[in-house]
Image (tube, rainbow, N blue to C red; front, side, top):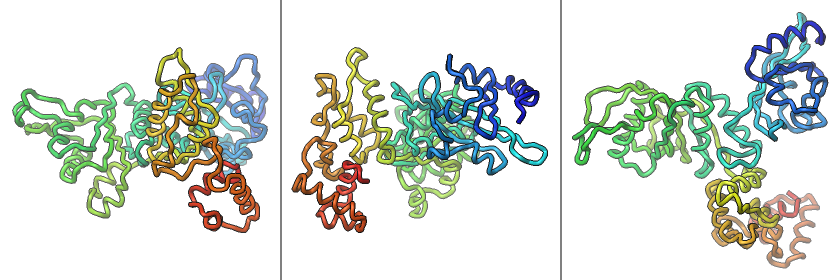
Length: 440
């Protein structure tokens, strides 16, 4: 695309956009940027006009797709249409999650002559250690965060799926804060452990005299969430009898307080969460099929911590920032960090936080050492920790065991199951040792 009048006309148009936007040529060069981009992403003393976008945004020497990431420019070129992706960009504030939307500009022959890229900083998550909110950079985390960015502006009901302890409430809050209802209340309903009667009175409220002890009228959580978001946590624990009333609430947008005949209008955005297999529960008759389809219009899978091992140092640093005094900064020695990264974390982020809170109490010198961490193996949660993780010798025959493992691996003739059998190890323990030795 000619960098003369055509580009200037396009930039003049983009100046009216509140979001940062740039113009790129087909060779990844930044031709121009609007004022919003200059304010948010330009670094003083670092020129960007005429430079490759992947060098400015990622500090790569090659385009994103050649560096193992999704490249929206490549995809837009193939589609001859728009593409969107969540990337982590280098900014004047450090690494940040950025929602990138890219649209190709076509000439009269349908050939791509330029691209317009819009960049929106994601404020609901941090790519650096943070004292609050969601933290992560791993691909599995970014996939979930990308889904949050897509669904947040809509009113679609969202169902957050994943194991216990994966941060469902934080993700739900991120959806709320990125929506048009961010100024309204965010109301959490913990569905676990509530009896049918208590669930109804908590959700819908009650009138004075509705039952013994109802001395005044009380607003329910549905009313409290008016104009905002209602988050139903542990949705799989809702009693079957209450599922009918919940379905009616969602379908009609109306409800009645306990002890009242007056119909109230509800005005909330619904987000649900569960660690239970709802589809299996539907098949077993433990969860209503019609309710399942109502709440799962946009499911988002939240990855377990074992699929985000690269995020553990970020999370560790963040949790250590969140507790204790600012004057006493606690760090983690490499051996302890390796041990944390070798654990499976069946309790996920919640378990990691609890382990760190305990370890902090033993860090008299301001450093968490490996001996301050639990013996994960003795709890039956994982196989024996690797020597790299614990700082101790390899079980069995020490160096000989390591040599045997390396020898079997280097032959390339055995599967993981076969190697485990030959070494007398469980497959999980073998996996840990391979990983510890850099052979995985």
